[in-house]
Image (cartoon, rainbow over all chains, first blue to last red; front, side):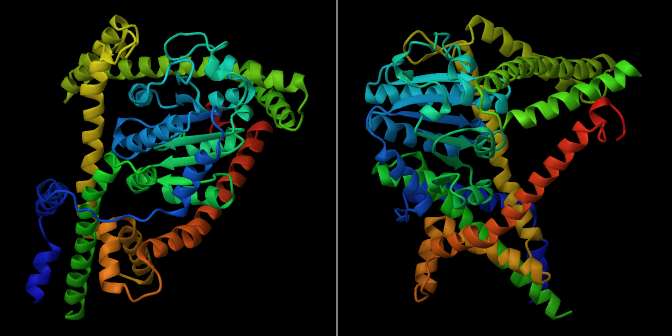
Length: 272
Length: 224
């Protein structure tokens, strides 16, 4: 027994890598696991807030992430943009991470095409501007001075999508999707948004609960799980729902490895 | 001495005090001042990117010139920067051509190079995390045991398969896996995060005051 425990404890890391690869590929072999997911109150709160907005309300979405966080935040952004277009909200898109500006543009363009929405009337993409905190402060002062032109070089003043919007205070609700800094915390500290929710990678979600409980965030979508819950609320199975199977198998493998290593550890310790 | 020390300290003091006061003055003149200074900062931030790029290229050029071990990777940096720059200029900085969703050369580089490369590097984390978890996540003492239990429960409650296992094995308990995870996130996790946030906030105020009153001078290249 002791020998076996020693062997387990000194397992070659390549075996773990292989197990991990097998766990990630398993859902491709077995097909969808079809396990039901429960919707958490923090995700439901974001959904309900968008549902409560009257048609034609401006809605700001800042997509502050880059391709490294694509599996978690891309489906989340798609789901939120879909929801906003379904509700006929006027979407104002932007981003604070320069390497993510192309992805943010693609999300808006793809979903807009799907819903037959018109650029400049139903949505606008402001793009990226340098100086994250100053951009947020600037939006609190005057959107047209911070973004005199949109991502495509069009004048922002006079765009019908921005009618009645001068500062962040004129936007009833915004969501920041973040993979780090600048992100949700930056918006909470420097933004003057009337009402705000956050969406983030699972790794930074625990740090956002303080803002949720204080009411600075009305809701929080955490990681791929949060995105899958949102897709469930929209009744639309997307990339996050599919990705949850892979996350399920890999998480359970890691849990199994934790149990195995602790059993082996204690069995070697007890026997001296 | 005067220009290098007293002038920057005086600027830091005046600007620091002025903008601490500005926050509490909702007059249009005060708001206008903030907007103007904020515009300056956005312009300065833009130039800092140029400075960063110049510094990156300078350090890699030195490696290539001295042919230090691994200088070939520095050449890759140059190829990447200059290649993307050229493609960006040709595509006029646009991802899509015209009104449709046809990719430009820049869009192609972004979609087929940057996105998969960043995704690949980040996805490797899963493998390293699995290995590190196996080697280090052991209940060696009470604190490590508590951390392990909390992490175990959060991971279990985070995925549908974990919830399914919980329901099958511990379904007789009054709480579900996601509720246990919710409690851990909303109570002990949030208490710790609040403590950290308060500490960071107080630290930021203290550091700001030290800079405003000239006690902290590291920004001028001095020791302290």
